[in-house]
Length: 231
Image (cartoon, helix red, strand yellow):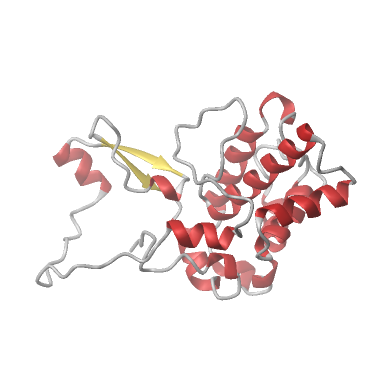
């Protein structure tokens, strides 16, 4: 866990240790019982994006640092409380502007990885993704719940879309381009050209949160009513 966040790719043995640490309340059940390999691609890509310029904009440097922040985030504290806890552990005064910015960047990095939702904007990088802002006086669960609200499901005379309605058929019949995304916020987003559709590419993560959401209160906002489902 002392390895650098810039390590890429992440060895499978380390992936297992990270999953155990990040989602520790779910440990011990068939190694979580889901395939999180795509999740760790997201983990690596997100770290690379936040740690530009040798990571000078982020206080977290190792996988252990990120896991420690993750436990604070998942405890249900608001962002200001998480920040104070990290600053206290590092013995950094809250008035120190640059260190506080780096701590905030580390909190955003950690939350982005945990929820596969873009939280905040990394310094000096444009990802092209839509982002959610995490305000100081709200917990991450409150932020997620306010965005992923339960959607009204309309009845359409019991009609169902057939199995032929797939990403491939959208490309072939509708002349769409598919942009695979790690960002749940961008799922089913139609780009300005109206021909590029973003689709979330990690259904195993959704199966994970559906299975273990009760043990991870911050994940309760994810349900079959408000996040995409995959066959």
